[in-house]
Image 1 (cartoon, rainbow, N blue to C red):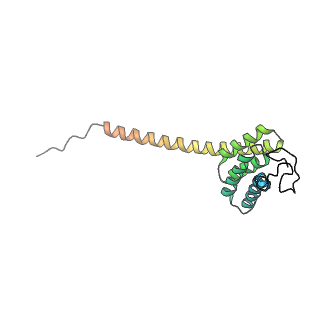
Image 2: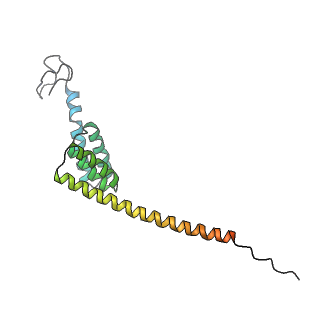
Image 3: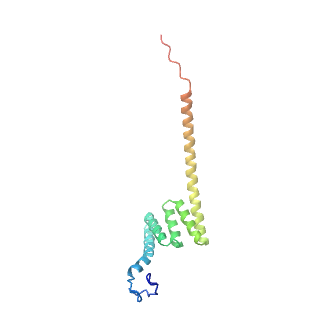
Length: 154
């Protein structure tokens, strides 16, 4: 470990920097914090608690934006939460760090899931819009139609 105050090399077993006497316990805990969050996220995923795992992995990636393993697991958790758009966005970030075949395959699968979800939603919205247009057309035709003459009075 390197002392954050004087940049002296310090052994991991040291509680204080031998050079400047800075207490290092809190620094060591802060350094390990993302690892603890990552492990907690793994536990949440094993329990089927995808949303809490997703939030933990997001936090891990705020501490370590270049952690490709955390990004990939975050994308997986987002997919399990039913958010393919987030999975694609996170995997794009991971691909910027460096490509590998497994990462590319995970991205391709996430993109296909996103496109599938979007196309089905798009289709549904188009159908609803067409129905609304047809209903509006019928209402306009009814409103513009000449009124029936009043019944003759005796």
